[in-house]
Image (tube, rainbow, N blue to C red; front, top):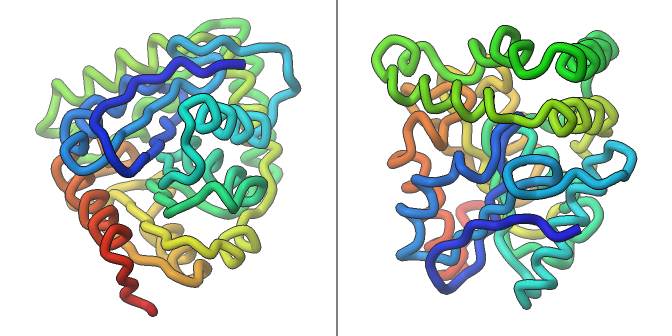
Length: 263
């Protein structure tokens, strides 16, 4: 399995993993805005964008191992690894399985807890429906919650772009990823064991993984800091890219300087 990847810039490698059910296309503003301070590596997770799905059983661990193989192929020993929403779940799986590969961790608009039974059942329902009916199910059930109210009210082009990204998701990959996310474990013990610095980012209007979830993750990690993105919902990197990039740039500068606000 070789992931299709878009990269930009030079220097410190920063891997950004996309949300469900999008692709690395969501990171356009990060590739453009962060290329001056780091090497931005944005893969399509398996089944999405230009990456094939393969025949493995749905698992975030499989997705995390894909990313490590990508690092190997790029000749990268250690990197800053981060993700938004589903990408955050994959990042936490990577933290659990490959902690020696991390220079830093970015967890954006995601959460560490496992799905309760009702949420697991709902993921299975959506997985079955998308295989039968296509991406119209995702547009109806997921799209309304992906962006914040400010974006809905005043950033029609951004909302339209998100809609297009959701609409282009392959149904087989969407179903596979829903089942992988449904089976994910609680990751709070993983967070407590992270030795690298951690940046947690959340949109203040995120209703899927709200600021309280972000605060719980910051409290769990030994060396964490929180950035709240104003006027952004669940897709904070797309809705307010300048503020998102500023938070990441500050984190990269902190890593380069070797300082720690809690050290």
